[in-house]
Image (tube, rainbow, N blue to C red; front, side):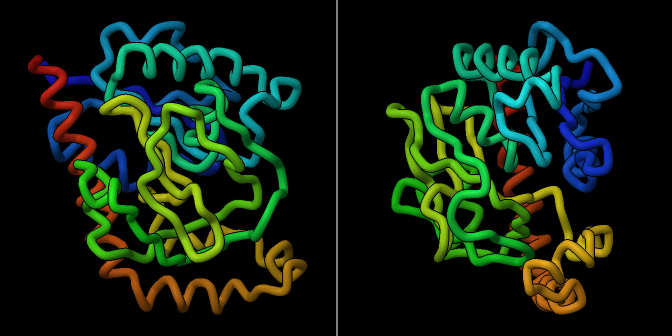
Length: 237
């Protein structure tokens, strides 16, 4: 029987996309649950991995997203069990929040589109983040940020503007601010009017992402494959 990974979708319009396809290619079953529409499991029993996706929320914004209560509980269970976990954007912020870090809304530089991400020395030795090589362009789309990592976290990557781009808790729980599931083609869904309000051009963001799409796809797939390796090893353990 294929190992199963639970994916919590925090924005109905932003599902697991190519991440799901890549996991399925590795013979990993994906259970994607949309928080606003479906009941989130109360336990990770029976799952070999966990993915928490992004969304325009804060980790404790329960009044807007009541399912975050259950999501934080799953995050705490994953950390406690050291279950292979990938928290993306909001998902990474949920992990940081649960583990004692600090997340602030609309704080610091806004990052949109293809952004160079650089591994730290620890990141170069990390089984998943080492796939960035000397650095790679990854898709970003955030204005909230982790301002302080949990005390036990290991910093794995940074960008020119934001220090906390990737971190690890234990051996197998990782959070990233960037989006390995998103490709240059996905930017076409972004809100052009909102971007203009920030002084940005959607057409220019798409063009810049397309220019690095080959490298971005190569690294994103390698990162997801490395995560899949940990899921498969854990499932056999």
